[in-house]
Length: 142
Length: 142
Image (cartoon, rainbow over all chains, first blue to last red; front, side):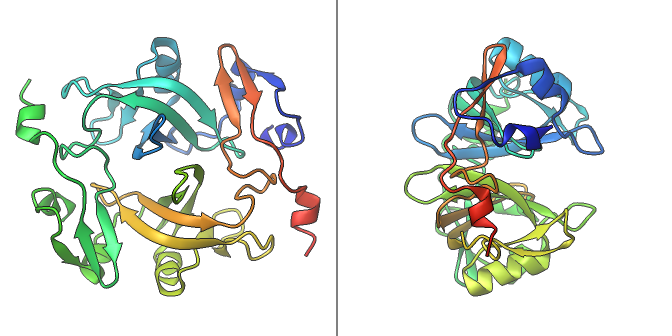
């Protein structure tokens, strides 16, 4: 299915239901979704969605993932208050990865950092980069 | 292991071998890696690495993935000439996703587009966005 889109010219409109129906969820029914902050382009995190989480995200405009550790829908920010508003959703060429352009309130990371990628390889070391904006004890108190 | 890094202060140096040894590869021995163009911040693609691909990437500075369809190391650009030079590698808070900041030559996408996320959800449609820079017939001729 996705193969047939490759030659389509820019601006062509495809039917949403049909495209979503041909997404390649993995053997657990999940698809990875990268969250990127609009305008700054900062990659905030990567998490997983099932079809239900994806549908809810598109319907509500608030990003909802599937929590693999808790085996339930994870409405980003439901405990921390740090929600992600969906600005645009993109699908990749193979239909097996999503890119959500979002507007993230505060820290996206459970450690209280703005983004999850705070470990930077630096020669033979890995450096802690990225400041804690809000103490997680504070974030998850509510 | 990754839990123990969360409280470390910014600038702390961790041992690379130790950190890489505790990365969470999935049941197939793979970890997702997002490729982002340095400076522009454009998310180019997402692909998978096994430990060998990761080691080669760090050793050579040229991004190498694991091709799930071909079940072999995939030195990005080996057939198309469109290589990815690694500028920085980041690891996420859970140790289960990588972010490679790269310098991408030409199109990252096998469709000849600059990035793989060329399908944009737009209301009840999905719009073809992103121009083909180089015809794939040309890209893969060599």
